[in-house]
Image (tube, rainbow, N blue to C red; front, side, top):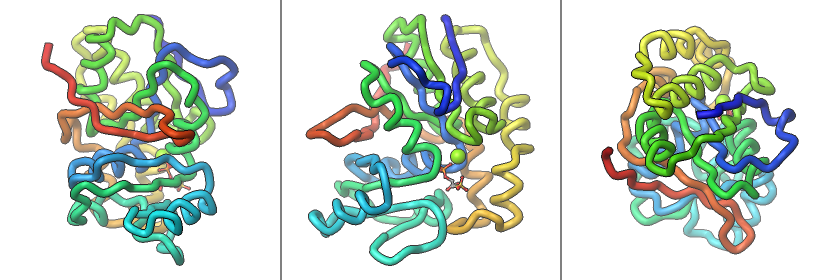
Length: 227
Ligand SMILES: O=C(O)[C@H](CS(=O)(=O)O)OP(=O)(O)O
Ligand SMILES: [Mg+2]
């Protein structure tokens, strides 16, 4: 497999297959939302767009990163979301890195969003589709976020079938700046279990695929058959 690892500012062309990685915390949160029953996640381009969607659809669940904010129902924390009942709900998500990365590749024919919690399912889907040219979007810190790069490289290894061992990749993520900021309380809207939840390898068996629907980038769980 031909894999490249790019930060959001480096995305010059539309990739044929994009895997957008945000371990801490957007796509760990997205996976938990599906795990708690959400039907779909609309990826919003701005807080104002998220609030406008919420105003039009009061039953939708508006979520953004940072501290709790007026008009939003939830924050970007797996620890805080894991007990929510989201059965059948539509979630609107806006974050600093993850949702921005997915929107940056919205024209790609296949867009997967991933973190360690859906790593194997994502790799399995890449294998099943025979994707041999994959752009990994390393969303954090303009492509330098260690947790996202480690996860992207891990998924690439698994997709290539090289028998990649997870331990070193998870250690890199555990030692990342994002993990430290979450642990030290620098990032707002956090739960003490967030880092551990973001490092829970293959917590979920589905992958997550995003596509444009009615003008919006919509993320849905994707059941991947075992190979
Ligand atoms: O909520 C997060 O952890 C981050 C926010 S920031 O990087 O601390 O500003 O957003 P994400 O898009 O999930 O990386
Ligand atoms: Mg992040």
